[in-house]
Image (tube, rainbow, N blue to C red; front, top):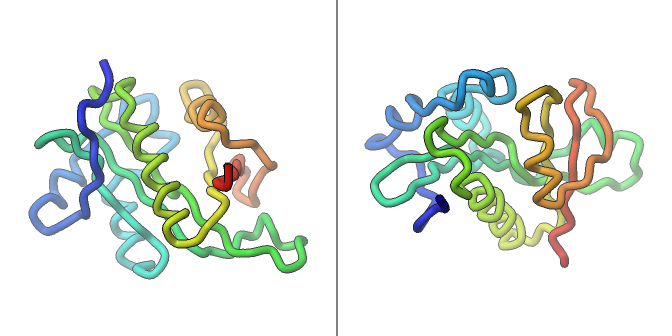
Length: 160
């Protein structure tokens, strides 16, 4: 089954509790922080974080949060390395996976990066069985190495 008409919606007072109740599959919890934690981080980083609900019709099917223009320790040795933008969090509800919602959300984040003048999308992930690595690689992200937190860093060129 594929997503019918997914869209991104801002998190509002009317839908914040629904957002916080969103749960990934139990085996995926080691790979992504709860939505409530993401919203707390968005609250303290309002100029960087871009939290959105993934909706299909009236259903909230996931959560995505992007970041914009952040210097990365990964680039510390690179002279004049530009700040990075990309995917900070992605959670698709356990019963909604495999329908294209994650792919849609990553595409929407990348469109927002382009709209803001960016040409590169960055994502980090933890390794492990059932983790998101294959998903990001299938979307075209290229692994560049490990961050100081031992997460894999991947880039996607948005100019093509």
